[in-house]
Image (cartoon, rainbow over all chains, first blue to last red; front, side, top):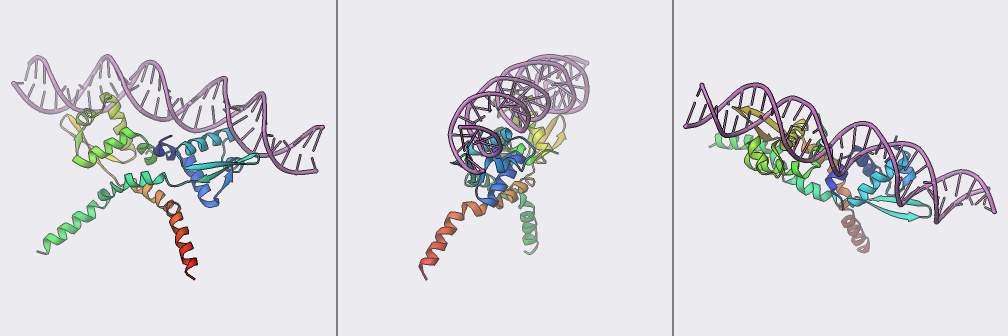
Length: 103
Length: 103
DNA sequence: AGGATACGACACCAAATGGTGTCATGTCAA
DNA sequence: TTGACATGACACCATTTGGTGTCGTATCCT
C-alpha cells in the first residue's frame, strides 16, 4: 500500500480525484479522454491512487469504473492540523501584546 | 518555486519540518545529525523545502540556520477542505435517513 | 460471426529523485 | 596562525517516476 502523500503529490492525480469527486463513477477511457497523455499513463496514475486507497475500481462489462474514496486524505489533514498553530501564531502574538497593554 | 505538495511528499522532509516546529531554529549540521544520511543529502532536502517556501534560512557566522515557515501548507489545507464533504458523507446520509424516519 | 472497443500486462525510455563523495572557502577558537 | 568546523558547489550514480508503444483478450454491437 502506497503513501497517500506521494499519491497526491502529482497534479495529474489531483485533477483525477477532482473529476471523480464531481461525477461519482467513471470508466478508464472517459478519464483518459480528459488528459493529454495516453491511456496507459492514465491507468498507471489510477493504479497509484488505488494503492493509496484513494480510488476504488469495479469491473462493469468490458470497462473498469473508478470511484473516489477520500477517507485516506484524513491522514494528511491530521498531519496538517499540527501546523495550524504556526500560521495563526502571528495573530496570537498580537493578541498577547494587546492583552499585556491592557493591564 | 517548487510545488508544496511535492516538497511534503517525502517522509524525511516531513520529519525535518517537525523538528523545526519544535525548536524554532536549527543549523544544518544539527539537523543532519538526526538523520542516517550524509550532510549533502540533508542540505538538498532543505533546499527543496526552501524552494517551496516551507523553511527560511539565514547565515549566522559559519553556520546556516533554518526556521519553519508553515504558511505554504495552507494551500494543501484549502485543497483538502474540498474533500471533507466526502468523508462526512456517510454520516450525512445516516442523518438524512434518521430524519426521514421521524416524519 | 466479425469488427470495434476497453482493458491489462508488458517492454521500453528519458528525466527526476535521493543518495554518495570530494574540494574549496569562510569562520571560529586555541 | 593554524587547525578544526560548517557549508556550498560539484560530479557522479542507482532507482523511481511518468511517459510511450504493442500485444492479447474479453466484451459489446450489428
